[in-house]
Length: 68
View 1 (tube, rainbow, N blue to C red):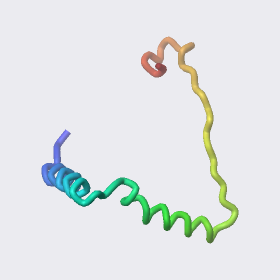
View 2: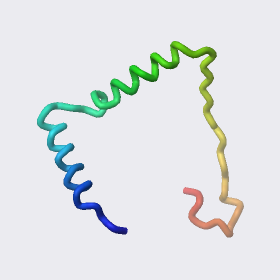
View 3: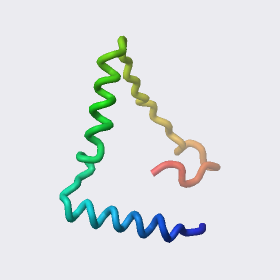
View 4: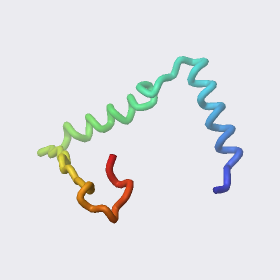
């Protein structure tokens, strides 16, 4: 795997700035959250789906390490 030194330096510079200026993940996500809410209010209906499927591989001995 080839590393990208510029991207790594940029990541650490970003982390330093966020700590110095008190920027939190909530600050970064706030505009995205706001835009999402505006789009949701403009559209009807809004459907939310959740997958509650449980898969059990413990009866499949050939699939080692797939369950914990």
